[in-house]
Length: 219
Image (cartoon, rainbow, N blue to C red):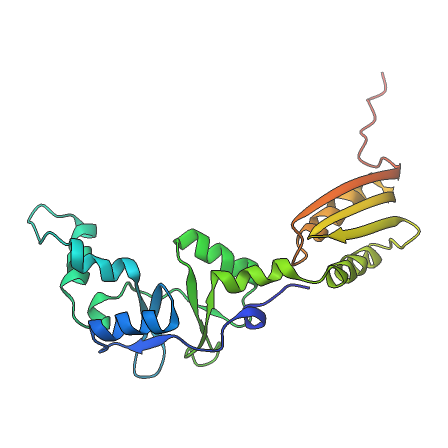
């Protein structure tokens, strides 16, 4: 049920060697219409990334000062570089084909990046690239596929068609019906929300037994 990077990634590994020139970097970004390029070593292992922001430092670098802090000195290093290995941000943040789409999205969000090099888990060599737009594909899954996943979850919780009525439209899941115990509701909804393609869950569920009710102490 969990979509993996290998299910949505681009099969083209957008990368350049460490000795690629500044012009090569710009040309590669323009050719593939991307905002960053992976830099690889002689064994095709990612060692860094050059982004549009790194490239633009050439235009805005005011020069080095003795008062510069570590960040400013790093920006000046990139601005004066002429090869990919001198301009790149390191290390490269990578994923494998087996990484979940959810985890890849978290990495992009946490590091404020829009793409990730995909590496072979055994060799560490680059095999493709995954972009933010690739990750969005999980939200256009057919409704019948989402419904099948949810029905499988319900079956594992011993809930069938007589217990629940489930509909899916535009990624929004509507669930109504009755479960045996109140404590069944939380794990059911948690699992449904994690199904790839689910945007929101609208639940109206009753229960036969309130097993979460704490009886007051006897006086």
